[in-house]
Image 1 (cartoon, rainbow over the protein chains, first blue to last red):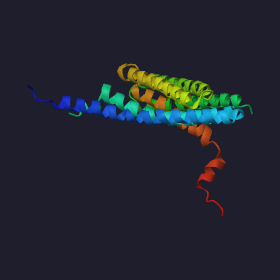
Image 2: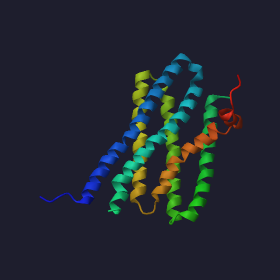
Image 3: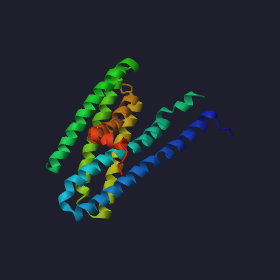
Image 4: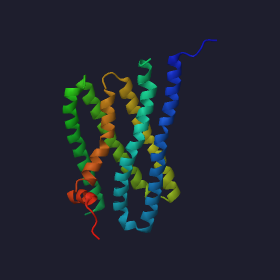
Length: 88
Length: 137
C-alpha cells in the first residue's frame, strides 16, 4: 500500500476545512428564520405596522446574510481553486 | 409616507448606491487588476445577483409575516437555503469560468452590505454624531 502524498493530505484537510467553513451559513439561517418568526408574531399583534416591520427586517436580514456568504466563498475556494496545493 | 412606497424608495437608493460603488470599483480595478474586462463582468454579475437576492428576500419576508411563528421560521429558512445555493452556483461559475474574475464576483456579492449600511444607517449625520457624543446626565 502506498503512503499518503503531501498533496492528498492537503486536499483532505482542505475538504475538512471547507466543511467547517460552511458552519458560518447555519448561524445566519437560524437567525433569519427566528427574526421572521418574531416578525410574524409582531404583525399579528400590530397589523398596521406591517410595512415598517418588513422594512426593518429586510435591511437587517440582508446585512446578516452576507456574513453567511463569507463562509460559502471560503469553502468553494478551498474546494475548487485551492491555493494551498500550489504552495507545496 | 406609505411603508410600501418607502420600501420601493429604499430599493431605488440601494440600486443607485450599487451602481455608483460599482463604477468606483471598476475604475480602481482597471489600474490594479490584470484582466479588467473579466473583473468588470464578474463584478456586474455579482452585483446583479446580490440585488436580485435582496428582492427575493423582500418577497420572502412579505409572505412570511402573514404566517404563523413556526411556519414563518421554516419558510424563511428554506428560502434562505435557496438563496445560499444561488450564490454558491454563481461563485462556483466565476471560479471555473475563464472570462469571469472570481474576485470581482465576490466583491459584487459583498458590496451590498456597505451600500445598505451607507444608504440606510450612516446617511444621517446626526446619527453618526450621536454614536460618539457623550450622553448628558
